[in-house]
Image (cartoon, rainbow, N blue to C red; front, side, top):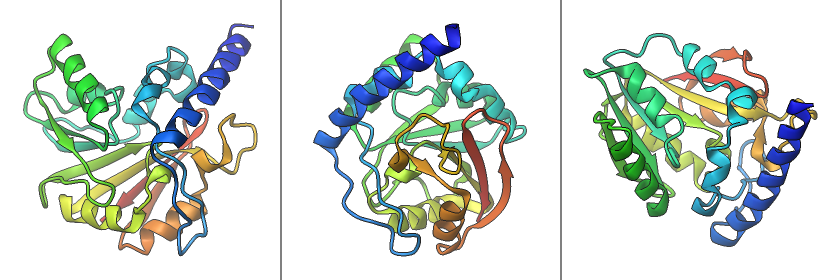
Length: 227
């Protein structure tokens, strides 16, 4: 019964959040290789959705990060960091010798994240204002780039992937968490899901190689690509 109530609440929040998004940044087309239609960007007005308590059992964030292996001392990027739900977890995992670059397109999200980092006393995070066609990360500096339910929203995915390749070290990893399009039971709008086939087609066209698919999460693929 608790899970049913949580699911109803989650669906209500999503239904409320997406129309706000559509008003701010609208998807502009389809991917030329996969034919996938781009979704609208999750607007800062929907930040409450990112922090919902149900996210723990819906997405199992710690399990997701466990799938990436040890991150101590690494330099990682949280692209589309939003209010920092994954950023602070990454900061703990990389430790004092590591660093997290938290990138977001929306200044309002970065303002929320800055307040969170100050409140929680997280020192090893650098905020990066992004662009729709460039992550604006330091070149050849990242061991890992993580995108959690973000890639499907890119309106310039090819340009963004090229800028991510530039930011990754040789052998660096790009990891996507995306809701499984193959599963009709996942209660998310179709344009906010991705299939393994779509991700593989789009990323391998930009020089990435799919090295692992991990489906330990309740609703999302963990797609690990190498440069």
